[in-house]
Image (spheres, rainbow, N blue to C red):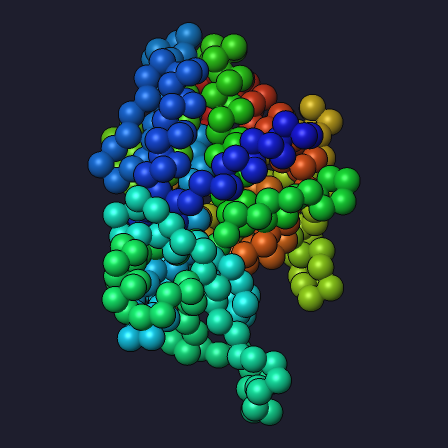
Length: 366
């Protein structure tokens, strides 16, 4: 498990908020090039690794995970040197106050530590003691005393901001830190690449690290429009509900295995979600059962991922399934996962890829 922790620590230390994923794109591309037959990066930034199958005419399988993280963007610099910001993706305001962040120069050449200011406790008025200020009232302190000093440092409107890297062990099996959503998925992709390098798949397999999932959930669309695979499996996280506040709202807990999605749905705004292809979903469940791996069944409202829209791309759509690793405190500066769930998920996806040999009937209505 120490190896899993160390690899995730390295991945989470790379800053890659939506739209600014280039440092991680570069790392993932180099890693995949060690194993794949071909690696391509499209104009949006999606990284596709191709593993040619023994049967070049068989149905193609695409396995994907997004590599971007939530973040912030500087939108205004006060004359006093404080920074105002907007959110990139679903950043919860309630977790921001008093947090360390990393603020990047607009050209990406360097970064500076910052703190999201919090009302001084001793002087907090009564009406503000039990409320969360709106994002418009928040600011970042980078220790600079004027707008001119901030600009001279390379920070300007458009500078990306991330939570500060902090991955640590928590108890015997748990890890906690930023961007586990979805560096866990990236880790699983890299493990699958290593596995496929040693075990040639029966049919052609594409491993894809996608971009801008946290921002608009559509960055992966060009890949599906181009490749039009017969089947695809998304690797992401899902909210664990085993904390006192959530009280098992959904039956997802840490340490009980990866979750096979039955349905997810955004629940508001743009209608989007996934009800997986029944036969592909059952294929994943059956594989886990035959391997004697624990797994959970995920039904969750409030979650939307890449597969909500990519399942509908192409001429005929794609048979889609979804594997999730449970995660506490999603999108907060410190998220928490269980290393056992990650290892079980890696074993399951590798075996599922091996078993996908073209014999699985993915048709509907039979």
